[in-house]
Image: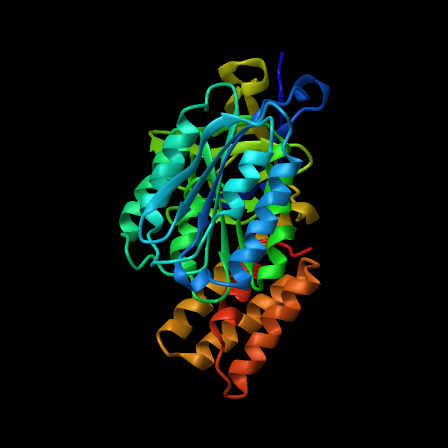
Length: 413
């Protein structure tokens, strides 16, 4: 039985037969199929919570309440572990099946703030706890921190995020306040196919925790990979050829062997397809229909205890015409704009870091216009507001820069 859906659309489904070369973008949507994949596996969740000195008072109190609310919403039979960290990590709750919640809530209540911040030790402890129950479950790590990794090593963090992905774990990151490192935390969530949320104020934590839990509970298939096999005369763009554009934008790490390309997708969630945009260059194609590539998904179904399943191979075809007329696909164009918005904002952030405020303002304004074109009005407002601030000689706060980057990665709700 096939459990995964695969829909493919080209930016333009035809090419001009007289052209020696053409460029097309393929939008590949991957999602669990309805009733055939409805069996949900238990959730294997690890909460990794910052309790450093900067969390003292209202921040830690609010995070504790958010964590307790999340624990109450878990199902009996889910697996929970809790790691707290300052300059070192401690396992508060070893991996265990959720039943009586009172002792779990008591551990949260007992949390006190002190010390510095060591994210990599905390990640290591969290991954070790998840590993104890990863078979037949949906393994998710939720990391919340409010600071820089002052007592840790960011390169080690990145290696641990890739290790989590290899172990079929998803890493979700919540940055609290304005003093965490956007580049580091975004790289962690991207590497392990999770989400990055900006929790600007402590009172927003409960909503952010709920978003992560909703996302985790929507997972039906895990460890998904997309393999593209290119036809002769077809190649990927040399720079950044593949990117995820939904549910958030992520530049994907490509593994290529001859004409076969593989990228990791991670979890597949109900009602939230993962959409991959592939940038393809085509050689001359004689008039008629031609297959330019083939797509296939490999995945696990933890609810059924099945691994290394494969979808049927799906051809990507295009029609070559001697009387070609351009017919852009509106949905694919929206995906192209989403990726453009992200990359324009990345350039703006780089220019700002280099002290080029006019250049950053110009790129943010371009990104705002791109957001408007794709109907992302809230993102456009944020990007244009920050462009205007720079144009009028104002600085962007750390919070502004974080809000900009988050607006670049997704369509805000």
